[in-house]
Image (tube, rainbow, N blue to C red; front, side, top):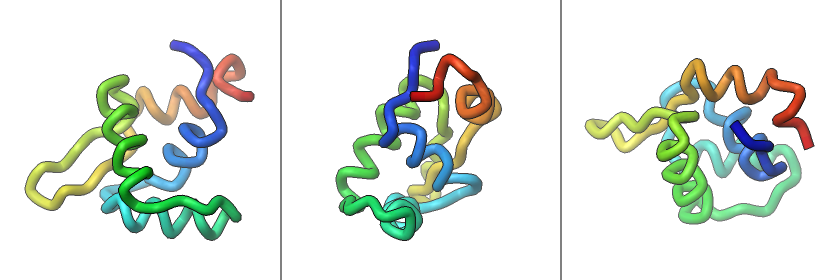
Length: 79
């Protein structure tokens, strides 16, 4: 698994449980990052392709996976 960018890391950290993209964007804004929910949704879809988050189709929400948690803990993933 490759390194996570700052944006990818923040997005994973802000998606602990089933969250809509706008909720993740609000959490990232609280960290001081100016982001829009559409941009966060694209990032979440990319992380889904890498199997770092899971998409819940019925509610349109995302959740970090065990692989995503491991990526956050990995020393090589830190920027």
